[in-house]
Length: 272
Image (cartoon, rainbow, N blue to C red; front, side, top):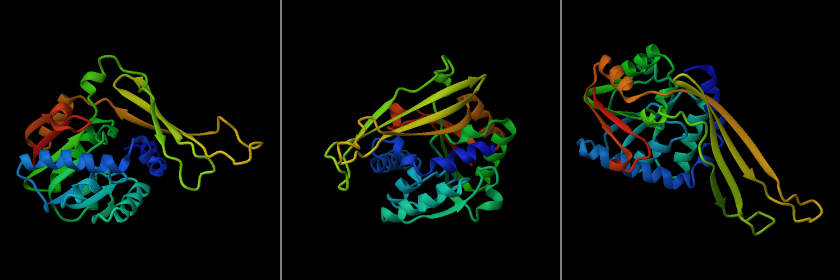
């Protein structure tokens, strides 16, 4: 994973929750969807889970809240620190560590019944060599017949027209108690994608409406803070990920689509 993608998550960690309508609800909703799928494979709490692309904890906290024994790791120290803080704030128990998914064998102790890497983290691996190395390391952390679960965007569909941007998501948040106005604050989130063959650079824009001064002379009707974050992805098709999983020794590969799982991205499961 290139340094600029590490920087992407180091910088985004503070604002990652803002890309969701309600991040706490998303944690619980994703936990429910993943738990339902895992139980169909005979995996249920309190089995040991390694989330090796945990970010600030969206899936790790959701599964831990449902009784799974979760160790959450990520390449970004800022993201891992926030995941620990958010879990504690929600009264959820998990452990954390800093690790690169290409080096789990050396950076993560023990083995697990389930290894997950969700929310399109694997496509940050831009070369076949890095992808193969990550799959090898994920398999090395699984107990015999353990399960791997990965989610990615539906690149088989996206590559047909290579979209240049996502539609803006407009979110109205209630004004905090300390606000000097009674008005809700608005958030606008969207992405711009710049393509080069099967790679694209994503620029995320988060626009936040600011609190207004109680002094009419100081109030500005269009006070916004704009934050931008940039990362690079490979548009990884399902056949390419299947090939990397098979090369690493995984078996029983199965794809599960959002309309069947209630999860927001396609999911692939494989046995170690």
